[in-house]
Image (cartoon, rainbow, N blue to C red; front, side, top):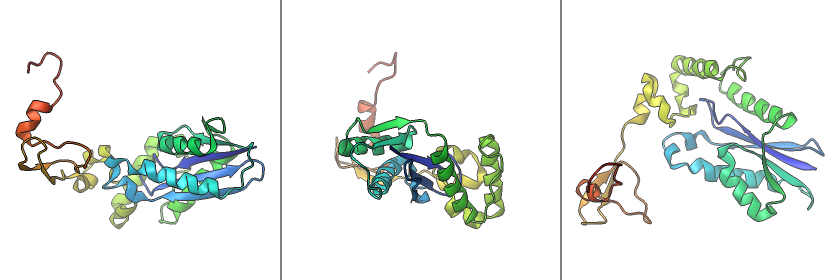
Length: 215
């Protein structure tokens, strides 16, 4: 038989993400959460991928899988790292990427709806068929309840076009030391030890050349 892993909420404005695992043979269902903070200030760093992998591994470990049982995991990009890590542990033959439908999908969706209802929000009945309408419905609810913005995925880049979210998308700068000349400078990203950082003057000599540009 098969353990199926799916998610709900990754494309919704409210709350974090529900990751659920459904065992076809026993009908057992368990789920964990990816906290909404991974979709706020640190969203661009894509740490939600590592968190997704951690959550999936935790879920799978709760089931006493038999050696012949497969793990089917949703094709969504949120599980790219998780799938790779599972294949290292359980083998490529046992871990497969699929389009999830049926009972597994339904249970994960129900879990997500329960979580957002706990916030006081009542989702649209036709949200699955009208995702765009659901997005604006959630946004209007947030406008009426601004204290609940802490439960929104405010790190999404596209939200900077909406007045309500502009304050979450102010340009943040970080102090750094230029790897070329050693001068102190500011950069619009968090420096990493394994990658060079350049001041504005030195960057002009290192930035990729566009087609037709001369050195």
